[in-house]
Length: 316
Ligand SMILES: O=C(O)CCC(=O)C(=O)O
Image 1 (cartoon, rainbow, N blue to C red):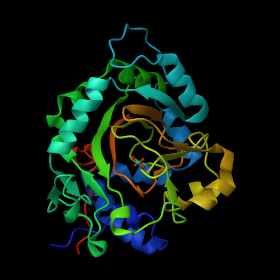
Image 2: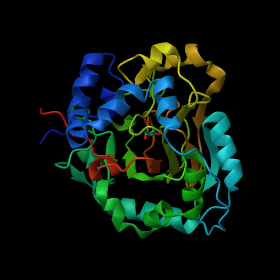
Image 3: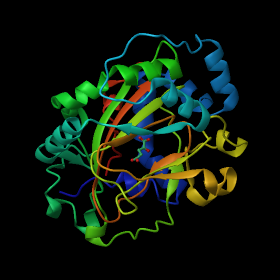
């Protein structure tokens, strides 16, 4: 059976119509579940909308509870990095946690290209290397709950304290995702210069914070995460008024400056905290597979599907 089209490749399609067509079923489902979603989706991208929404809510407050955490990072340094640059990139998972999550991922089936009909083990290379049926991602969705070490990170006190400091007292976990970015090199599909790279900002909630952890080493060939420093605070008017959240890399660079573009490489177990309202992207893994864990915080309860990063796929 053909797999659903790869969203990683669709995101790089230069036809806005095709990109919108693929995303529309997810947007429609979000709207039907909670029509207030549309308000956030339209106004959350504008500076004025964000400011007005924040004004009606309690401001940041720092509580001083002692923390028991998996991390040694200093809470106020993480928050200062987020406030200043939109990113703090010096978190490290304990080795036993990193190894246990990697072992879980290697021995548990994931869903290729978000498609529940494509349940595969990451080692099943042949299931994903057909160039006409390329599988570029493998998501675990709710299966991630079967991994106790992921659950421990999801409830880690430092992550929760940083989220409260940054987002306010309503901060809550709104996503827990574990997924592979499969290397496209096996099919020779994409080279590693990726001129088609797109950056986007997230609009899943009015305000958000994400913690990302690499479970495999990430270099230029394994899909490094990209982040445009400083864009968490303000977007150019053309990006506030645009219907789409994704913009070509060269346009984002010319608007916000190439010096601000970070490519995040790191050892297995390294992690970073990020305000995803800033422009960011996972670049395509051109040579080696990447396994990523995301714990996302927001201020509004999400639905279960969104929590695990599941999309509603367009009919074939
Ligand atoms: O895969 C990545 O590095 C980025 C994921 C991403 O863009 C997101 O969670 O919004």
